[in-house]
Image (cartoon, rainbow, N blue to C red; front, side):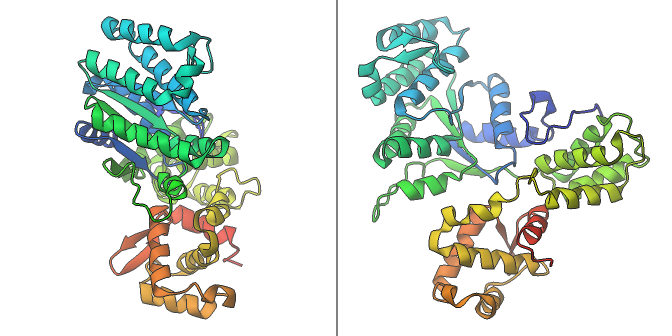
Length: 404
């Protein structure tokens, strides 16, 4: 096993992404038939999956364009980004590239704006939908291989468009993308983001309507690594620690994978933690160091492992139900694992503040638990629910002072 550098949260090179080959192949298999929404908790590796999809597109008969669209704050900037990335993705396809450059010369001005190599003229920017349709129709007509648009951080972009312009314009972008998917059979899309797309859709949906702009897309959850891949990642990171003495590397790597719930982001953090404890002075690294690194990461006042958002985002996600959500998560975090609905309701009835009691109805609690599962806090098990990831549950216990 070759060593890897520790990169907790930093972008990874393709060769540094471990254990995602099977999942990426699954995504490609689904893209043969339809577009995909990738969903997962933050830091689960969605952007790494996007990176691998771009790197392996040609092997699966696709041309990949797009990328991180968070930088776009208007429909015109979004179109400029997509067209610019298509032009970069098609250098070897002379026929379609010539046609695309002809269209660009008609609607754009060469300007080297951001990642785009041109800026839309005012008329084209105003009529951005027509321009986007025309570009993708041109690509679909002239290309033999299907095109996949990788739209990472799309929810962030939509939120910026909503705030900078209006909810109507943000909805218009999603409706236009849906229309493109329905019209151009050679175009696929992969959407992902750190903010759940369902939260953005909820905020954009007009009351009383059944608006569902992505309901024909397949939602795929990005899981933690398979355990053996998590151990393999841990071993490669351990081998990248200079001067380190690890008498029992397999056992230490196993402990790291278990402590991190097989999540690569936390495995990188644990590797950094054990390195900082002993790796620079040559002292032996043991499983005890793994546990100490986990405790230190959870308790870090600088929140370098990024746990505080778990609590801070509840008001944005659940509004008036945030106190009830917080109480439910507290109860689940202190349980011995799985808790059934009736038990949870009884625990909450006996513990919540009277200001929250009015919201504790069976219907509201069931709806809330469904949302907490969708947002990756909890997962269903036989007979009840439990925290989805043990490392996150442990962080919540500390974050909420439940262990004091």
